[in-house]
Image: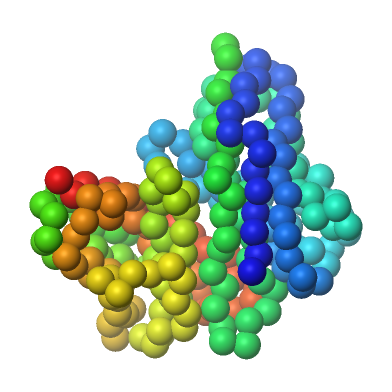
Length: 118
Length: 114
């Protein structure tokens, strides 16, 4: 079974600075998807970024980028120019690339609570 | 707004009772996933439906059941409730259950069992 580990329960960053959240995972598959979801105090789960394991290029979405190290099974999220609205829980998630049963459930890490200091 | 709706937003009930949580997927989405978020267990997959049929089961208790109706909305039924069932229950939907799909989450239903 796949597992996802987020070793930093809490982190903080100064507004306008850069912060990196860590995630490692364990899988025997060669192809898969990785995601970062943001959960603000409203509790809504919001997709931040998605990475396909077969792509060597790291995904980016505006101020959010990832550092995907497939051999190390590492998938970190970098937030540049941090804003107050970035304060939230961040969850790393894994999903199989292919399922014969057509099931693509997400396996989540425990999350990292990010605080942004004005 | 993800386009996924869940009702009710909050639910308070007593131990031993039964509740039903409802989810309407995004327009056109055929797959519905249910997840439970609790303080001690984190976010866990419960069950998935695709176009009315059950596709996969995760850590879902026997006291819990779900179904997806012809109009594609889904309901999660929780019975013989225990204090430990208090959690945030999310529904997520995706277009077709295909490998390239991304899941979009609803706002969740917060269940409190007293």
